[in-house]
Length: 517
Image (tube, rainbow, N blue to C red; front, side):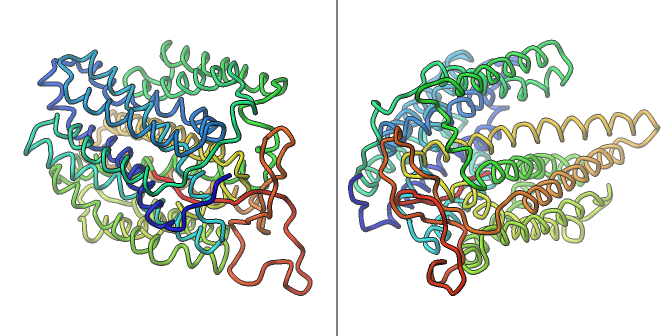
């Protein structure tokens, strides 16, 4: 591998800018959907595909994109993703009909997956030292967490001032700047090479299976969980993903090598993240709807109402999380954040129909800000702790895939639960506002249960001791170097402390960086 450029923080900012552009696009587009429908003549059902086409491509390709970064070089894959995303944004802005816009959105999803899937792997190499890595992950995590909230405000302003096409055109100068900066600031690196092998049948099975799974999930809002369409897509997804799992057992160069899944803490951290993100996505969507339908805020006021959460996330993740992880370990910080997130959801689970923002909503917003600022960088640190340089892209793709699928599952499940509960209360004679509030309270109580389950999984499965990267396979094409545990507290290396056991495992210049939500 080539040397890492010395100016690492500018490189991190480039990766954060790429992540922010991709994440902003999701929420920016959601705000502009009514204007898009009026201008291009979308049907109500067809309009959902402006969002779904992007989600299907993005969620389905993350795993493959991460592996391509390992094989071909992560900088090249990142540049390709940003370039495709930027060109697809131009195609979105120029769309003259529904089919063209949906196709361009699918291309945006492909570009977004390429750029996002390798970002964490690049941060692994940039920041081999645990303390610096923790701070870098915190910065990257803040970018993802704040992006969704910023997108709601930006989308509304751009759509109102310049029309819906502006939300795509704004990506052109941003994408160009990111490409130029990436060429200058990101380290030039070689992948382990195509000779190491890409399991093409496995890649096709995984990508098609994930796309079918996302398709099944995003269609539940329109078709329901038990509709033939949803069940059929879920069955196809299960069949394809089952075939992928069987393929990995016999493939000479599997897309997901067994050694990666044996890395201490990797599967556990992704399980925790799945449960956590299921609840977090529900918080943002359901509370935004409740603030308008129950508390009577307009769209602009709702956007501003969410502002305390990203502000607190910024303060915690940028100013405290990295230091806390270095001092107390990522596992401890994650557990503390999950406790706070449970408290936040329980606060929302008691929100009355006649509640006020300051007294009943703002405390939960502040608690969620602290919880998000702690849990997002901590869980990403744990998930990437044992990644070798040869597999960092794959590990990054796993992290991002877990986030996307978890968010889609959680949002669909909690929204369906809230609607079903509200329907039951209406049938029992409750007033409309009271019935809606009751449905949201039930959903938030279940979200608290999801976070509590994540806490229990973290307590029982995440290793207390730091985990180094897994030993490199002889077939991986990487040379083992010293382990770089991402979860070790700051201070002398374990081997230098009296009575301390050394960390087992060999890895490469390891990484670190967080992800959104």
